[in-house]
Length: 334
Image 1 (tube, rainbow, N blue to C red):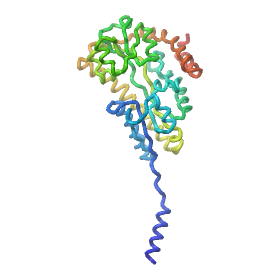
Image 2 (tube, rainbow, N blue to C red):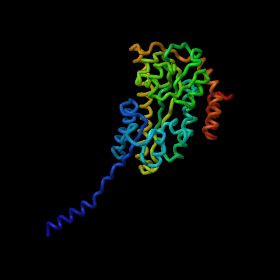
Image 3 (cartoon, helix red, strand yellow):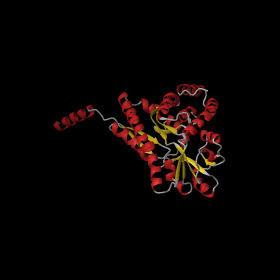
Image 4 (cartoon, helix red, strand yellow):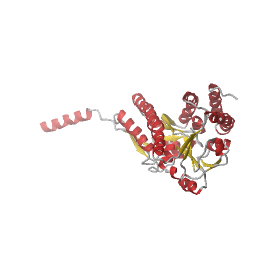
């Protein structure tokens, strides 16, 4: 009888003890394939959130191809809860949310101060759009600026007239036309042999992309245009976000803010800059020519009317308001 009493006392005590809550588990998907430096930095974000929440929010990172979703679907699958966290690239989700590309508009900002103004005026519209689509932005970043590598040397924009340049399409194609270039929509897998055979004359891409794809072997002449960027937004499913306590939300958001600085340091100011230095030091890049300040300013004047029409036709009233505001703040009203 004493044994039974002790067992019952132990059972009552065990049932009265608090049960540790199971960790919240998030799937996090990116457009970056495994092995790329981009994927490495996204993995760091997953680890940071897991660590800084003491495992209460456990984030598992999935590079591109490991889950059955395309980059163009990431905002939708996050909204639906098929994943809890995703890298939502603005240009990839243009069909669902064109406002996300507002911070990408090229050649409006020509220096750091103007970049800050552009982000200040455009980012709130992009973030509000994400929330309307059922996801909460916790961090953002940009892929490095597009530059151009050419088969043959060029001295400036005058030498670019009539040249066939591979682009990702969209606005890149429009301002290439302003320069007198002929945009090409060659798929990435075909870019190297297309340049090698002279089907295209040059390629617009990030510097680290030139290095990774070994484009310097067929296009060793570097034209530094300080071109467009592509913004992406680390976004969390609304229900998953709302399920967190205010303290956890604060911790996750802080981790995201810190990671945004990490991305800028490691990718934009790090890997991309180092890629050019490394290619030059090895003699893989034969020459570097930069778009002059005068050419940059001329390009800006030429693209503003194009951008105005583009925003009006493709983005709508909230985009038009943001665009006109940034023009006013930059002193560029025409």
